[in-house]
Length: 156
Image 1: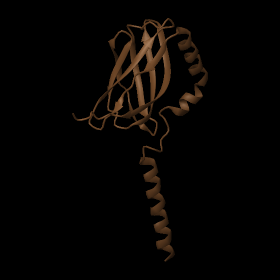
Image 2: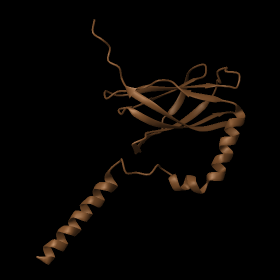
Image 3: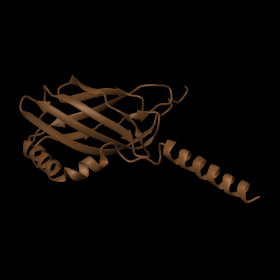
């Protein structure tokens, strides 16, 4: 009897550990501790980005269980004029699923508008980590925005 009690306790504990480690809800953001160690360098990047005077705004995107959704970011300078000719990287993840992340390349769709295709299957809060570059100028920043479910069109 004591053997089976001990054995079942160990098996149950191992099963729970495996369950927690495999669950995408219980995950730290990639490079979380590395970012904390390099906090001063990060703050210098934030100050340099603010000095550029660029503003980055997220345009509405909708979650779709059916496939890809387009995500668009609008980049303007301090005079509210579009910033053109940027190459950009995006690291995106749902706030509740940080292990399930995407790293698309942003492409310029029109003046100051930069787009990427992502499988936004979950509505809710998404984290957008951007790195935008133009010549020697580099802008880095984070945005948190809500992505809603795709609206269904009313039937006539």
